[in-house]
Length: 326
Image 1: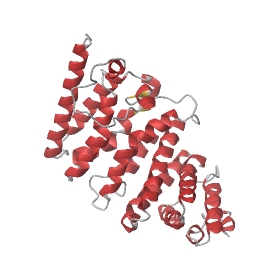
Image 2: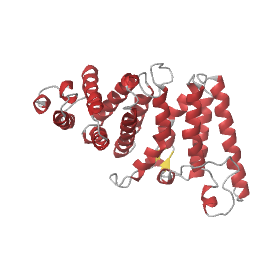
Image 3: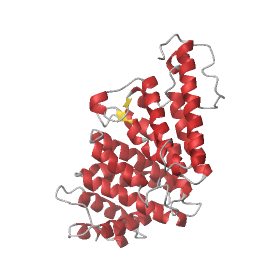
Image 4: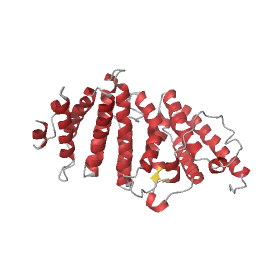
């Protein structure tokens, strides 16, 4: 029945996607992928996408075994990359996030982990989608708007957004970007435009009214990234001396693929830039956003302090290695 609905003018109906019968759900997902990947397919009306995603959400809800959940999460996320048109892929992604934000508080504690996994799969697939588009500036801008518009998981002004979603994204964002950059399915990828991709987090850190959200972004994303990009990082790897005068971490992420293949905003023009330069560019961008009038005063002070700490460390590291910091 699912395949019949897919061949009609509309997408597979939600009742097939949310069926209690696993075979019916599996057929509906495959029909959905075929429907959306049709090269002649245009972006669905918003109401149709919302209905479609409600069905997909509860299709995943019904999956009840770990291996089944993992396979289904990957299959749904990979639809982003089987869709022929980039505009349709991005609208499918917007539907995912709007539905996830809307339905999140209904998820019980026994199911929450599998939805965290689904978010992780979509985050990774989104990066691979943008890589395939060669980090097209308009596509990256649309991606950022999906995350930060009302109904998106990183919107500072939308009180409906569950804070746990922003926390989870802060926890996994750079890890999944590092994995995507290393993915062999995207041959010779252009450098990832880190300043562009971090804009949603810079903005949320500046404007969130919740101190714990700010702290999570700083501790889970900004501090580990700045540590990985530190000017002394390469030298310290070959040294017996302590890596930094900062307080030690039990485990500091390295993001090796990302720091070796990243730029600020324009991959084709910049190429991969060295980590010390990239760190200064990102710190400057963070400083500029902290200086904007919409930034909350308490957050501004914290961002300025983080900027100052990292700039001082950069200059100290450069001086200790005899580098020119002028």
